[in-house]
Length: 167
Image (tube, rainbow, N blue to C red; front, side, top):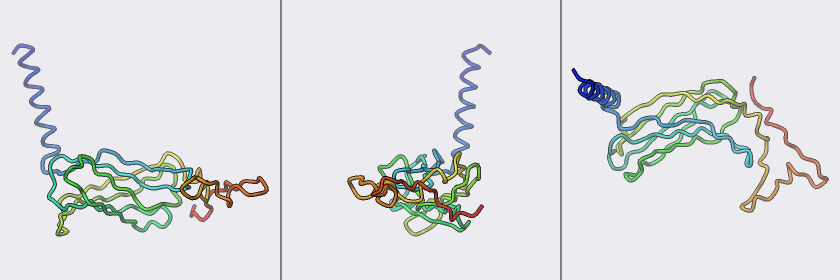
C-alpha cells in the first residue's frame, strides 16, 4: 500500500471514530469554569455546550450545581433557541468556593414536554478560593458608584472576605 492510500485509510478511521463518540448526542460539553467577579463580589459556575445537531423546538437546558456552602443543589434553567450554536448556562451566585475541590454539575437537555433527551455529568474545580473576593460589592448602582460600606467616608476600606464558610 502506498503512502497516500495509507493516509486515506487512517483519515477515514479517525473520522469514523469521532463520529462514534458523538453518535446519539445532541450536545457536547465545550467549557466549564468558575467566574469570580471582583467588582460586584460574586462567584458562579459557567458551563457552555456545543450543539452537535438540531434540537427539537422548545428544548430547555437544565443544570444542577453543587452548592459549595451547603452541599445542596442549586438549579438553573435556560431555553435553547434554534439559532444558537452554543448553549450557555450559569448558576446562581455561590459562596464558599474552595480551591482544588471538584464540584459536581449535572446537565439535562429536555424536550418541551420535559422528556430527558440527554444527560451530562461533570465537575468543575477552581484554582483559587473564594476568599479572594470581598464580602460586599466594591461598587453599587449603574454608574459604578463606590460602595460606602467598603469605601468609608473616613477614608478607610473594608475588603474583608466572607467568613461564614465551613472549613
